[in-house]
Image 1 (tube, rainbow, N blue to C red):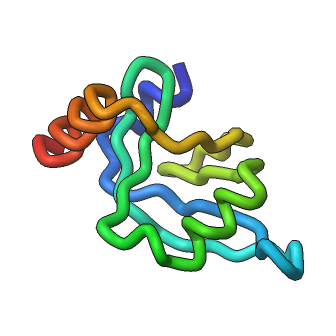
Image 2: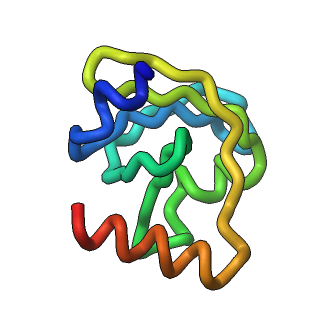
Length: 91
């Protein structure tokens, strides 16, 4: 229900943790909400935040005044990935 209230927002503030230091970092990125999940997107998987999340998938998301604790996972299914990409383009 909280996610439904902020699903129309354009960006999320992602708190991720350094893969070596464990230090928290924040980045603002685009997202789409889908079926109770938040999908994040980037065109550059070499970014530090992506590498940090791969190492430490426990993250925090801040969207429109709401904060969520989450565990990230990377989409490996091609069809799911394409479906989410289409939702991102439409948003």
